[in-house]
Image (cartoon, rainbow, N blue to C red; front, top):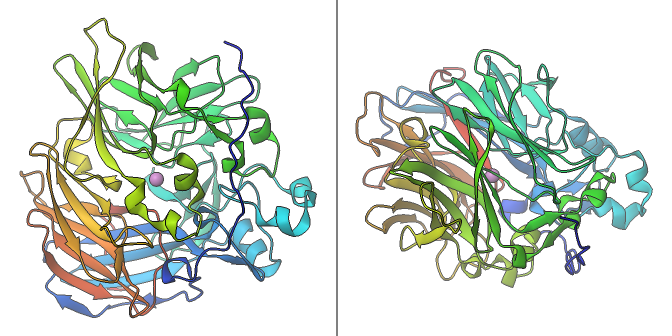
Length: 493
Ligand code: CO
């Protein structure tokens, strides 16, 4: 079907510098601390290292960035053992870091607004590659190599014990494309990482691929041509038999995207009349076996998915807020009122045996979450009961300010909240030998805006009550995602 050119929305209207708030304040200090002061009691069994990734530098030269996602990425490691916590943080020494620090320039494609365009005009694009090594979103491990990434197919390897940068890591048979997701899945049956890459040079192709856990070799699983412009999909769903790509109506203008310098958001248009399309890929057949339609919504993150009877259940952290507000993350007071974002934990049920191609929807709980996490090892792609994430109270004008635990069976939630504090993503860690889904802890880095410092909070996952906290001597800017490695021992211990 030929594409009718759609006008881009009036976005960004007028980029404003990020607000003066600790979550968007640059952290220059790089430290390594063997023992953080601990209040409360951490479980003796809690052993391993949580590594987190996110923007921590918000100036290039003397220019203050206008978009959170453009911040230069930093890695943070919290290591646990014998009731103690050690901490280390470091900027990966990328080209993006080097240029920001030494030349006051942004490097490569940005997600949000391009300040260099304002500063230097189109000149910036002339020497800028169409990919950035500012891998500030997420990280993983494969073949015992640790690497960070953003939304483009570029991986930056680091040493998990020192957080030192090793360099760019290229996969064997790496599938060529312009866009990927920072949320690969792990397929426990196949013992492989699953992800997809969007290629958009001649036509739109979604390449679903897997990489066996002891290799760095990408293998194609399915090649999907949609005949339309690509959509922005920050994550995707996987179950025992299927991979599901959920094409929300954020349509990417391929020509604009392929032109170096254009930030992501300036290549997007919101086309709600197209609705949402669910592409169901059969993992064994390696092709799309069904396509379903659903209402328009915006989402970054899938929560989970499961096959129940002949239904495929796809659970997503959705919002119906005008997507410009969400993607813009623009720093006007009203756009920081995340209450207005109205997140919901929504289930889309796709009937694989029925004739209808329409998704049935239901909200899973009386609260929504963003940055959702689950007991991944035991429940990803399978029926589950609990999701953990960020929520907000009515009065928060700055950021999400509470941790939530959703019970998607009962439809209820529990909350952790402390005045003036802003938690990050809630990472679930199971107690060794646990049989209950929520037998373990939830870890979150919390920014205490009053003192301008952060602490690592440990909640009992079942009761959602605090077990303890470990104080970091500085603030940790709002970050994105992290992974807990239970076989990485305490640093410096
Ligand atoms: Co994400």
